[in-house]
Amino acid sequence: MAVALTKDNFSKSIESGVSLVDFWAPWCGPCKMQLPIVEELSTELQGTAVIGKINVDEEPELASQFGVMSIPTLILFKDGQPVDKMVGLQSKDALKNKIQGHI
Image 1 (spheres, rainbow, N blue to C red):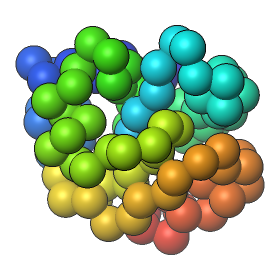
Image 2: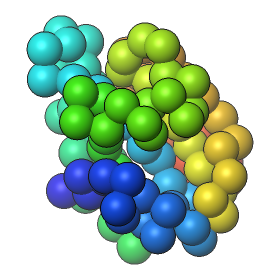
Image 3: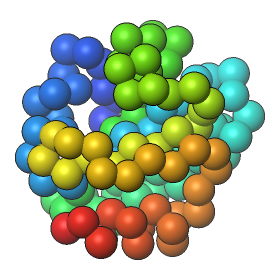
């Protein structure tokens, strides 16, 4: 299960290792297609990478901090620093390859 991230737990959750964060909203059609892919990855990569999701309606500060203008936006972090940003619907294979490239 992907971790629901908020401004309270965000920094702690991504501070070490590789993390993929999905910026989404419940009203966003492509986000609804992206979410099951993100959930599958969280199961497959458990213990290898942190997979999180941020509802931009509930956490607008985090979305603006990382320049999220369109959703879904997925940002890959390594030891707390953003290393890759993908905008729009992404395939599971593409995301998995990007994550594994930073492990």
